[in-house]
Length: 262
Image (tube, rainbow, N blue to C red; front, side, top):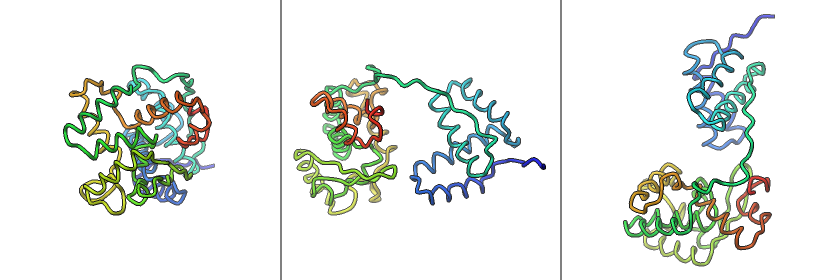
């Protein structure tokens, strides 16, 4: 039987992206898979993709100091592509990672630190950032879900979130709704996403991440704690402490498994 010669080309990646879109994968997932496959191409440097090359690739990422979780994400992208191409013999196992029972305290954003970030954003008249921080911390939304917070949703007091093939409803507190309505009036936002760029598009995580980091020095909050997803963690901790209802919390956060919430 003739051996299949396996190289990865840019055209293959484009066709794979089309396949993923038909599978209704998110834009972020498709873009990440493409980036990860280009990294593999760079490592291969024109060599044929073999099982040995993939095992060497896995080890080289570890030697370069990548975390096991990051290496696994690269391998998942490659394995998914190999399945699409029918190159099942090239798939490699990911690292088994023991789940941590607790989120490290030195990475947790405290209420006091969160309030300092809010105060600084207000002081610098960065109102969009101020209300993004407040929205993420008050609802537990992912930063990627902000695009679903439209002017219409604010007026209704709830937003329909479509993520990972699921739909869930996020309720806004009366205070948050009232403040966002005032912000919309000030910014002349009548419809579409509340948090938008100058071109009218919904902000993305890179916009928010960069603006949040710029607040760190003046608030004495370490940069390792200041990123959008940590506001989701802050919401989860505060919600759980108030009612100790982990099932309800999992529902609000959109987790399929309570173990993820735990």
